[in-house]
Length: 165
Length: 350
Image 1 (cartoon, chains in turn red, cyan):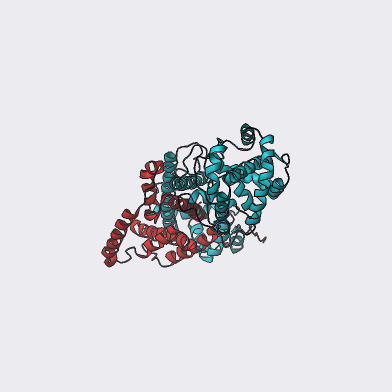
Image 2 (tube, chains in turn blue, red):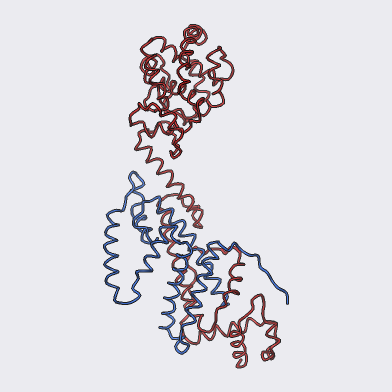
């Protein structure tokens, strides 16, 4: 049999880091499912949630703490209500934090502030951790976040295509 | 810094000898204007008009500190020859040199006029040459020009120009500013354009705006289809839509993976090679067509069936049971035993 060696990518690139982590977590998710009810909608939905969280987590861990959005996402993932008991506390914590950040949100002076007021807020909601950033850093984080999201989409698309042509 | 002192002494001596010569060589101020128009680009310096007589008296003691955008830069090649121009009346070495000579002479003329008093002040203020007080006074520009020349002799002082802008509102009597500013690398170079305000607030604002517009351009490259949109607000809307669509794509793909998963086992290495070798995937700007597949059993089994059917293309249908054929099945990916079992089972019922 011919051995086909595809050209290797940079092993430490964002893509490969994310792919490794995500595949590992995917296999974990698949391993622990019971085969009996594996195809029921609820089970699939539950798996979907887990896979989505796994994807976000893998992406955030691939970026580590280098970026504000990854730190915010990791924080969000850690404090999400894994068990129902901690829902209230986490939401309260989040509310105060959000209030604080609302006060601290800087508005750019000059004509930029007028133009970017509404859209910047929308962007802040989209990008994790964007509430407390001024416009320049927000744009910076958005650029990196877009790059990581595209990587994530590409890898996941490849995986999905591999398993369902 | 210590070098400056004998320079001034030498300078003053030369001034007295050359001042009369200068007045002969350059009878009117318009000649300076000619040189002026020659070098300066349209957006370089704040002030243009030359009023040497007024400026000479007042500006000299303060050691004019204006920003010289292009002046400073263009001055560089002639820097080393600056002193020589003073020593000998070489007015034709380069037009820049001639202009600086003019400015030098004019400045020196004022020094001569004001006498010892200005000389003492000059001694004290000599080292302030890098301080910028932004005023619409042309001779300050000339003085700064001279000071720029000397500071360039002492060391790289391109940073001085920007520091002028940043510090124009602060105190201007720091003696070691020339040297210390040279060593501070963290200043941002800002050039005031013609007709624009030059106080520190608007300058900082301008720097900020430039950074933001630079970021927007970078984002424009990232987000496909943004080249046609020129406004900032439209750009931001586009970016927001793109981020939303990417997030939705991730959700959809995770849903797809959740639905596809149950029958299959993941072999990390194979997947890894598959994943690694893909080329640049074209990005879908708009949300991809969402296949509304119901997460029902039929679909799952259907996908599994589809997969098994499409994979072993080269094998005749009857040979599923043959193990050797399984070896032929494998394309570039070696399947797991479990997957082969699935194949076998499905193939049997097919």
